[in-house]
Length: 473
Image 1 (cartoon, rainbow, N blue to C red):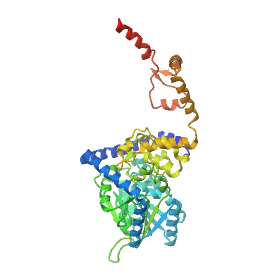
Image 2: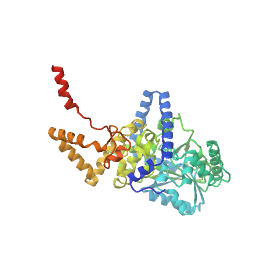
Image 3: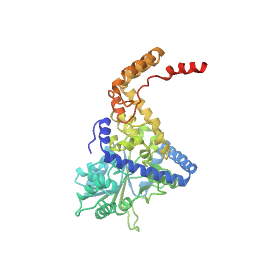
Image 4: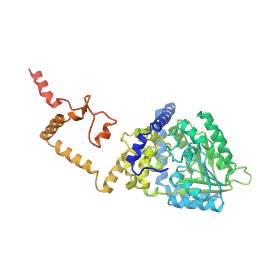
């Protein structure tokens, strides 16, 4: 999918798509409501205790990441698996494409994986002549549309059922209605055929368990479980930070992940895979490859942004964010949208390229409150704004001029009162129905969505002497 080069052009394009905005608002509203009901059932105090425990687990892992990575790798190798430690996305892609060539793979079936989106894996495999099929329903929809995910857990949230029906009818042998049951039925029937001819299966990873080498995959559709059971060669891709010390820690994280993401007590399918199947087992891969991707993560260790690695990809911050709800995911321009994307994109891809995203926030703190592992996203967004200005060694020219003028005016009572009198006198061409209706850019953009009252005939400091005079008399 081609993205406009600037954030401003992307969000203007999003704001002109009412169908997308309606779909995103409906989807995020539903998920927020389900999450709130789930937390209420647990109880606010217990929920906060869960969050404190989850934060402690993730902080401990990140602070001892080298030890847990070594332990994980050792246990995967002991169980007959192969491990690739990829410093960059390109190294991960090279490893997987070389494996596909070695296996002469024609059919590659994937479950949902944000890291595979991050490294643009599908495109490189297709260049080899492989047929790459996304088996997650949402991912399959956007694959047909030639788009990238617009939400972390609901990648096709921006599509309504009429748009999905059009996409499915383009590949269906029979005309499909817009009924959800019919659309799901088609996807189920169509994808099941693909599962029977897997050459290589590729999955993501929600959590890797260091002390056992087990890979945990959470889905509501069961597609990842089918892939891990039927693939002769299985590849799992994971970000290097997605590790937990033990199965006991997994119990905490699974509960928070499901409740934060969709309001469920648990995800429907929680699959733990330990690699190559034994001789007496009926299913499972004959060959297992774990690809652990750095791609910019390690450079955050020990920095003020280190806590962003705590993220468990629940998408809760997206649902809480008023900016995301109004512009959708594609306006953010890279793989990760919403508040977490506004932090990760400039950190992974460069502030010079994605630094504008730090301004895609009201700094209301809703994202931090929603985060199950208590990542201070609003503080990081504010810090990224400072970093962007320091990197460029300047702010916006118009903004600098405006603040210098404001400072000079408000530093003197006489200048302040003179400017107020002049503004009140010359505002009349801009006023309509008692409100400022017009103005030069960037005020004109601001006024499109907000009301600004016109300056009154008298201000409080002018009225007060008269009121005080009456009181004295």
